Image (cartoon, rainbow, N blue to C red):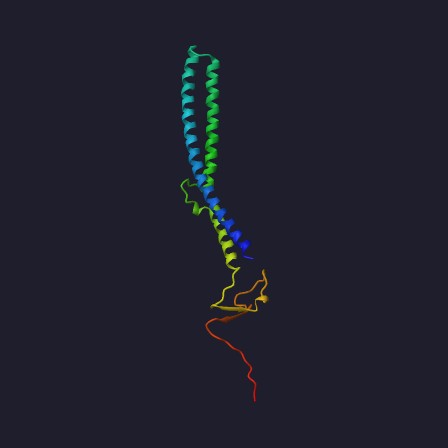
Length: 173
């Protein structure tokens, strides 16, 4: 009867470990996104410099209008890509609670997974009946698997191994 509860505890422990990995991966992914934003920002700055240089040259006839237009379109495309990267990084940061260095053990997803593990452990603990002292159990057939017993409910007899208890009805003469 304990096996399903042991399986539930193992599953909840695995889910908690998986959540830790997922949350740590989110932190790593955010840092990668920040590097992508930095790289795209540098690309936009280079595109801007190229655009400005070609703008002066197109007026003087040093480059064709097509070359200038290509530089302008490239600049616009990279600006839009930069904004998309920034938005994506902001969303990821929000998932981290606004702190890229957050301790994952304080995050709600972790706390929920931990609570599920604790509940599974609590249920497993409730599958065991404990006696106040060592002894021999009698009347075991009165307790059936799945039966609910409230605290302090007598369910079976327990005879101490340390004390001998004999109940007798002596005959009167």
